Length: 220
DNA sequence: CGCCAGGGCCTCA
DNA sequence: TGAGGCCATGGC
Image (cartoon, rainbow, N blue to C red; front, side, top):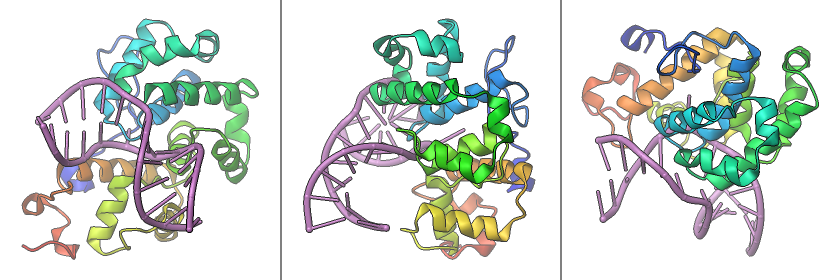
């Protein structure tokens, strides 16, 4: 996939001066780390293009910061993130994230033990395993492999697992087979998303699939 | 028009 | 623990 698609440089973040999101291969500042966490919640079961609209709204309203999100009323926040869907739920989820981050600094979070940190994230209302691992990997640079719907679909079609495999089991399969390196996990997940979006779709385009040689579902 | 998108919570067996 | 309902917008 890397040969076919090239480096993805996830997670996409906005950059002052740039028109759209940029892919710089990981967040450089606490502001970008915070933006990754917000995006991780907004993109739950939602196309990223819709998340971009919501993040742009937040940015133009000067709401894309911890302090601003703390102040803004829930109903106002919900209106701003409307394009990302599930906006009432997601507004509440962002408030819970903000409450969590108010207790510590991002620097402190990055220094704390990864396993304990994951547990604390999972305690938050609105953060499940995928969102927690996205935050851990892409915002805090902890080596957790992110499993999503694309990952499950591709892995099951390849014959690596059953369709109904649990999150933790599929994550364990990847983590047992790969060295625990942040850059590797980041790029691997991004490539799976790219492949799942464009080729290994619900109705797969096996003719253009670079994995067809090793795929059990391929009829070619 | 229907399907799908980088889930998670709640309820009920 | 697992299946099912619910949350909601926008692109194709």
